Length: 512
Image (cartoon, rainbow, N blue to C red):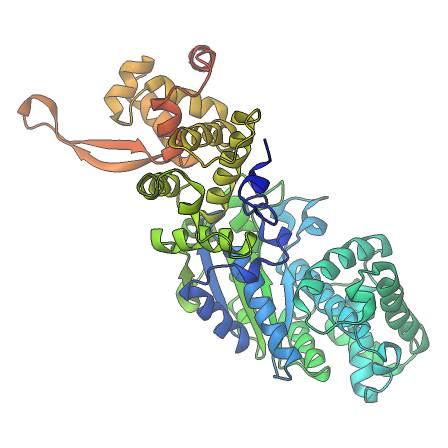
């Protein structure tokens, strides 16, 4: 049988990639939500804005869309801020802990990214090596100050790794590029950046004004003397090169190995920035934060509380209608408009409408998870019909097989195995403390502790109150329910090895 793509005459798989950065043409088929306009307007100003959203809800796609829009305007001759993504925190975290990250270190990292972006932008000009030399003496001194203080101070090996990542992002965004960029001649571009940065720094190394500029920003041991002063200098140099200011795009805070499993640790990483409101108020510099929605509680109460009331906030909210449009738009794009949408892939249009509704719920209304689920449907479709020679349409059974496989594949990576196994052993979609006590032979306190762990993981949520049994007028009990429809499907369709329940019982006994 032909593959799924061949069967439906796709030019490529519409569901193969789950990460926005891996989709170079995403802006040609992305569905733009209203909050994109808010993010774009704030970035253009530039001013600070926080967009909260669940994982896979489209935060990075919104960031990429906004970045591309600003660079498009720049190519058209409009005055816009310099776009600087702050999306990789490995240099701060690989050899240290989140607790060790200070606002100064975050500002140094941003300073490195600003200088790197400017150097790469200069390398995209036909007269790259001459353009910096044409600066006024005080402008040149400022630029070299920032290059020496924040860029050349980073080991060359680290600079090369960072350059490659930055080049990939910028190549997607820049409409007008030299042949080196078009043909991805990264080594040539890197050499150009090296000549501009190292060469000029050596040529002007003994300039008195250069040393004076550096002493204003950094102490003798390299500590930042004033974070706001550094940010103001970054804005100043961006304006020297014709930009209106700087728009910083902070994303992927929760995607480093040391932050990915904890919203609290993720919040801790950027707390030093958000806690210093004056860093958000530097004229000409706007911060665009794209944050995991589970971080919000930690930033609004407790030891990491910050003044979010002083910042503009939005939250990603996908309606079923937008998600259906997203699916159909992808299908049209990858079929070069030969197909109108999902209904053209299935046997029965009425069934398609019902099943799409189930898919949206099962994938927790997350664009990323919807794409992952449909990719699983496509792969299982190939496996089921491998021996068929006829062109086929997706059946209801094919969709159920794909949804079951999706749940089985992803659920154990989303939740701690012990927590998930215990919820399955409880075998209830709604429950109260007393039922947990009975199922596991816990005391009331032990059941409460267990419920708190399940709730903290996001697997369950407080559903409301349940009246006391027997009509005796006793105190109502908190009622909880499974919060993730994937867990419900896993349990109701028994999509797991029964051995995990036995293991869960043994682990609980050992705990007790």
